[in-house]
Picture 1 (cartoon, helix red, strand yellow):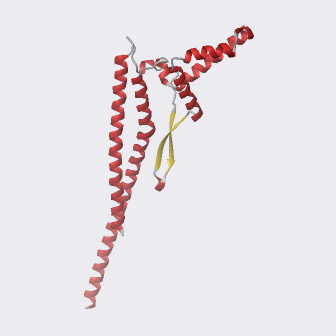
Picture 2 (picture 1 turned 90 degrees about the vertical axis):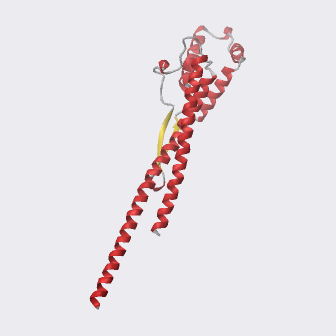
Length: 218
């Protein structure tokens, strides 16, 4: 029974090693893609424009947090949760598509002129609306770090962001979870082997005791 338990643990450990190796390989590919796309964006960008840490400022904040939940056999499960609600994410995507479209600015101008004609608004109302629009633009800019580099960020930079999100949300949490489970299985294997060794030693001692009793009986 003990040997079967050890064999099952070793089989599980080999499966985890295989998954761990695949995740490490996938993470390496994603990281290489991120750096290649950033380099491509810097190469094709405007003169003197460098996409990197030089543009970080007080607007930087965490958009995703680490969530650790208890799993089976007291093995923690690591996951990444977004601080933005799904509704905000959908609105942001729609805004990005709308702003990237060539007719976006024209449609905004036409809609504003039709919905809010100047002759129906006082100067105070117009100033308040402008302040609200500026606040909304600032709020939207904090959701997407690409806005720090301008509205029309290059495509390689967007690709680098997509690859980074995939690595942070999918690969890295699973990689850490697999590594933690591997450590747990290693501990279980050592415990099972010690238990088997103690059982074998007890069996040998019992056999020797029976032999001694047989000799004394003669």
